[in-house]
Each structure stands twice: as C-alpha cells, then as structure tokens.
Image 1 (cartoon, rainbow, N blue to C red):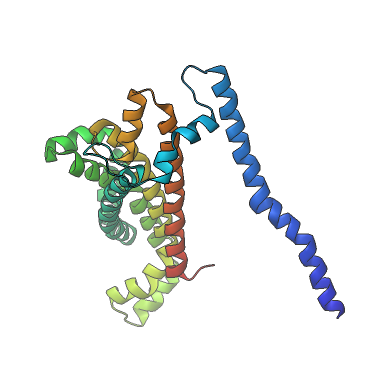
Image 2: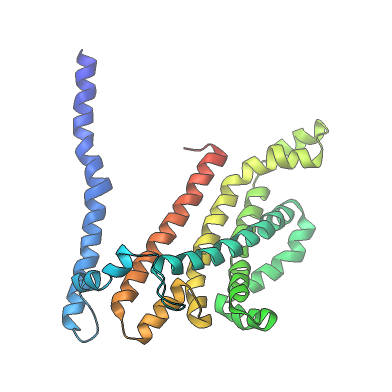
Length: 271
C-alpha cells in the first residue's frame, strides 16, 4: 500500500513537469515567434500581413488544399505532392548509389584513396550550381530537379555509411575470418547491422538537404511545386501565401525526418 502511494506521489510530481516540457514550453516558443511576426508587421504595414490577416487570406488554401480550377490554379496540396515526388525519387536514387559506395569506401582502403578526393571536391559545390548542367543534359525542368536532388543527397549518406563501416570493431571481422565466414555473410550479419545507425544518420541529413534544395530549384525552373509557388506569390507581392508556404515546407520537413526516424527504430530495434 505504501509502495503504491509512493508511486502515485511520484507520478503527480512528474506529470506537471512532463506537461510543461512537452506542451507548454513549445507553445511558448511558437507564441514568441507569432508575437515577433506581429510586431514586424505593425512596423511595415504596406507589405507585411499580420498573422490574423494571413490566416484569413489563406483560408481557401487551408480548407481546400486539393482544388483544381485550371491548368495553373492548383491547391497547395497538389503543389506539395509534386515537390515530394521529385524529392523522394531523387533521394531514393541517391540512397541506392550512396550506400553501396559508402560500404566500398569503408571496407577498402584503395577505394577510399580513389574516391575520397572526388567526394571532397564535389561535396562543397552549391546544389544550384548543378542546375545548369542538369538542364543541359535533360533539357526538361522535372528530370533536372530530380538530378540535382540526387547529386546533392549523395554525400552525407556516403560519408556516414563509410564512417559506420570503418568504425566496426576489427575483432569481429577477425573472428568471422577464423570461422571462414564468406564475405557476403560478413556484410549482412556483422557489418550492415553495426553500421545501420550511421547509415540512417546520413539518410536523415540527405533527406533534409533534398527538401531544402527542391524549394530553391523549383524557384528557378518553374512549373508545379511548392518552391515555384513561393516565388510566384512573391512576384505578386502576396506575402500571405508565402507565409503559408513557409509553414507547409517546415512542417513537411519535420514529418519527413520523423518518418525516417521511425523507420530507423523499426529496422534497428532501437528505442
């Protein structure tokens, strides 16, 4: 009985702390951002809308995200899906190339010596610098955007995978060799499971970069997409829709990272 009372007392003491940390403090942070936005809008009434004005102006987009009212008049849901399609295709192709390359570099000193200089040269190149090259290759905006996503999402996954593979305790590999375990079995049973946390870290970084890049690429290439929507609305001096797009882009990026994190938990069985 006394033990149960103690547990109840601990629960009552910790519940307000959990409520504060998980709900009240994040809400306070968001309220601070909204207040700052409101103050800036008050000092620049000619162009900047207040949060309330932006909400009212964007009600149609919010309540009807998938409307179709003509070839160039689509709801923000369709624009978001178009951008997500490009990102997921480019990111998936990048992962298919980057993970095997990371294994090769991590397992072979010769491959590391051959490929590391190339990676170090191309890794700092701005994603938008690849856009003219991709346009020259494909002559179309959509595959060009996918190519830019592909090329810029390679490097974090390659480097993190190689780091994970090279960080494996050599004693495990030596034991596998003593047991005459085939190379493919060493990879699937020892190297891959041990390097999975590094691989998923690289994938999460790559996906975040891909989502950042697609907005900038669509601003330049045009067409259907959330990035072009931002640029088009700014050209019309409609900051109401720009603020909505910024919120949608941020929440989508958060959900993408959360999804990859959940996949990592399922694959690696980590809590």
